[in-house]
Amino acid sequence: MDYRFDTKCIQSGYQAENGAPRTLPICQSTTFQYDDADALGLLFDLKAEGHMYTRISNPTVAAVEAKIADLEGGVGAMLTSSGQAATFLAVFNICSAGQNFISCNNIYGGSINLFSVTLKRMGIEVRYVRDDMTDEEIDALFDENTRLVFGETIANPALSVLDISRFAALAHRHGVPLVVDNTFATPCLCRPFEHGADIVTHSTSKYMDGHANVLGGVIVDGGAFDWAASGKFPELTEPDESYHGVVYTESFGKAAYITKARVQLLRDFGATPMPLGAYLLNLGLETLHLRIRRHSENALAVARFLQGHEKVLWVNYPGLEGGKYHEIAQKYLPDGASGVVSFGVKGGRAAAMHLMNSLKLARIVTHVADARTSVLHPASTTHRQLTDAQLAEAGIGPEFIRFSVGIEDVRDILADLGQALDQI
Ligand SMILES: *Cc1c(COP(=O)(O)O)cnc(C)c1O
Image (tube, rainbow, N blue to C red; front, side, top):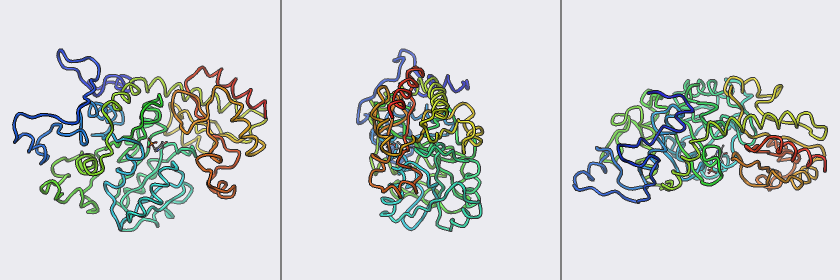
């Protein structure tokens, strides 16, 4: 049976057999036993399917991976210990020293650090593009060593919306895949594979978990990209000596990319989630469809309230009529634009700080995208090291507030915002 999305949130992944536990069991074991030495040997040669060591795979983790692959519409998924690990492994799986990749510039700050500083140390160069550049300008940044294009469906914290089909076309013209960080949208609001993306990543620490209880990440393989066509991905199309010469595209077909990420990179880097963490993530996924709709409704109400408020300078929310990304959000996010709103208050940094300190329900945390309403002032926290001039360049003025709208009763959220604005 092919179920609808909301049913999949609950039913996909773990399938209980006759007499087995009804809910996903936590297989909190590092290892798995075999009666026959040859059987284990076949696993090591990737000639048989099965679990051998939890660093590479585990039944609890595998069930959650299967659910997320199903939700995104991919052929396979791999959970990681954090979203950062997912982003790193997604890029490093197909990009080596001496090569480069194209990335949108308005992405998550942690991804910018990873790309600009750490990958650079590994000999991998990032080339940033703005979404207002023409196709010709972006085309000109590709060369024969370019291996992928990276962007975020709804960027954190810029809240820009990626024109996925446009960037997929640009990438495909050069024989390389489009990798999309779909953290803020979740597959409930946008499924990037349906618009031409090839690989999807997430920080599951945000809406997927939803409770702010467990860090995690995931990479999902869409299975449609032809790795052999361009000759640019020998790591997938030529023998891997660390597995007796296995060729991923030949042995694993559509799942070549995600299989290599697991058996080679998870094996070597060990950025593996705990089975207990995967279990907690699954609890979150069971209500994702309900929560994300409420987040989107509440956030739209907050954005409209702020837009009409005399002490507010500007409001940015992709679901808000008249905004820069509203039209593109209609295409990619027809069911809601997720839960994060940014805005600026009149009176600059001092007014912003005063507002933050006056909020009661909304708490100041270094997190977004969970059930509780929270607020962050990037200029004094995540972007603290920058001068006001540098902040302006990054599009983050001293008055900029990132407001993560939770799933409480929206009347309480609006009342809290209202009383805090009154105090400025
Ligand atoms: C938080 C976040 C990440 C990093 O995820 P962690 O789980 O914190 O490592 C990556 N991308 C986006 C869009 C995020 O919001």
